[in-house]
Length: 155
Image 1 (cartoon, rainbow, N blue to C red):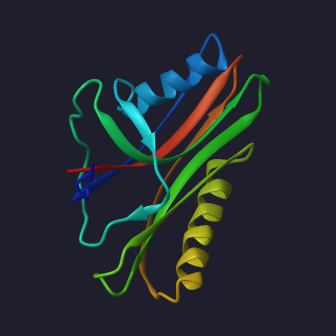
Image 2 (image 1 turned 180 degrees about the vertical axis):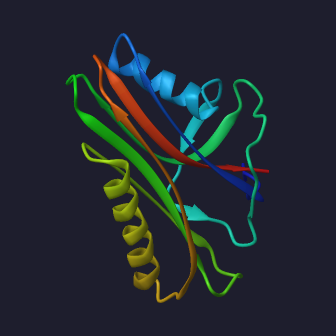
């Protein structure tokens, strides 16, 4: 079976508290607007000529290709953050590169690191970077929290 190459993508993020770490993660998915789908974690390539959209009303239960970063914690007061970035090459016939990163750190630090990771990945491919797009979220844990950031590919 060959799966059709996606033509659009959107970036999203969310955070949540929950009864358990899994409940917090589920809440973060709901906050990101993709909680009623089946995420298919993919490696980090954004197809050439893919168009960014604001979001997509994904069908409940759909299999959705996603590159994501997530972190959960049950340490009250801990600051956690997740971020994703896409580096796009100057040659638009080549794929973009998605990087994911999460840590017990601030949104600003996590987003800065993931952007550098995307830039470094393009250098490893011998590609010049035209643009880097990123999204990040930060969460201060009350009892059990999660932070989630993603690039969702869709057709």
